[in-house]
Length: 300
Ligand SMILES: [Zn+2]
Ligand SMILES: [Zn+2]
Image 1 (cartoon, protein in one colour):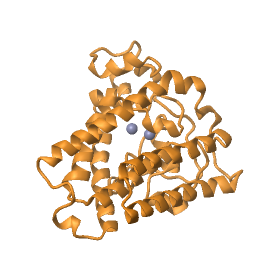
Image 2 (tube, rainbow, N blue to C red):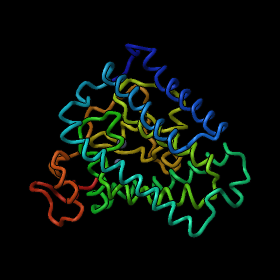
Image 3 (cartoon, protein in one colour):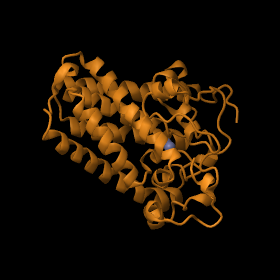
Image 4 (cartoon, rainbow, N blue to C red):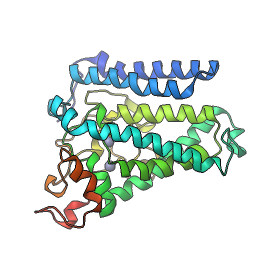
């Protein structure tokens, strides 16, 4: 599919700036007035999703990529509930593991830098770790069995940013969160801002709508670039919040007018259908392949 002039320019060019501006204002008020960061982070994880779901319901880019009642209830919901629990668990474990070793209110040279610089450094560390894990998850067969559930749907919409195998989340988030948020020495304000930015970009990058941000695609991962990562028979854009490491390691894909023809797995017969929740959860621990699958086709 080729993108031409947007059918609704206000939605295409206005949705992301509006959500980002609202988020920035709330973050600024939270830091200035020392509001409860966990409560604000939870609010900021919810409100933009509601806006995105309404936008993609009214103005879907790919009608065939839409969330349906069946896809949400019978496929996504169990994974989303598990993801929320697992992410909380991973973050708590990361805090507990770090608290015995390092100060929780920032330390070292990073904590002495301006908050904006701390945020940038934290995001760079976070995404370098993520990038390494994510590329490995696409090239090693056992890790792919854990990560593939995120790619199994042939659709792409906002709530899919939570559709992961819990071991994928635990493996990536625990290590990534512990190192990037606890062992770099960043202050709580910097960590809070980085967490909000990461959550927003991870959500917005899955939205099924014609959202365009132009050159900002070279600064932050978003809708226009992450959809290539979900394209069948091509891969790239392994970063989760900044495309820096994809650009550095030559895996960055951004073609402003091209939309992938097909999403999901190269060969769906190589991976359990994520509607089969229990089978998908157990898939990383099985030794057999699915009937008709070949080893080489199983890893993408
Ligand atoms: Zn992936
Ligand atoms: Zn994704």
